[in-house]
Image 1 (cartoon, rainbow, N blue to C red):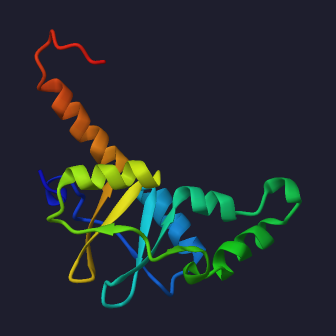
Image 2 (image 1 turned 60 degrees about the vertical axis):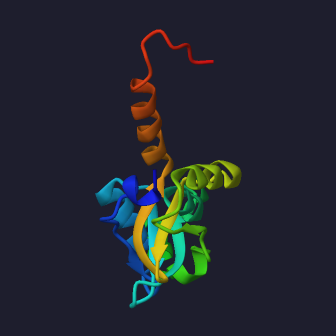
Length: 145
């Protein structure tokens, strides 16, 4: 079993020159929780999660106006807030290696990179799907401990 067998290959990304508003809108409209950040040549330079966006948003308790709230999202460059040099994996890596990295680093996604370019994403949700498939293949009387 290889990473390429379980990764999502049609992954949306943002250019490194985008702003926080672009990431927030992408997350909201796509329902995805991770946004890869790439150069014009599709070279991976960062990643931003839905949790990052929430953490960066001004608190509604801070009594900021809607305009000030929006201005934060419009004026914050992704380069400034993304996780730089994200952990990546090759599409031909064993899936067990990917699971070990996700678990050990306590991260929700690995960007799949080939020849320094983004070719996919592998998330903990993808791995839960694999686990579900493997458990369904067990005989009904097999006890899970």
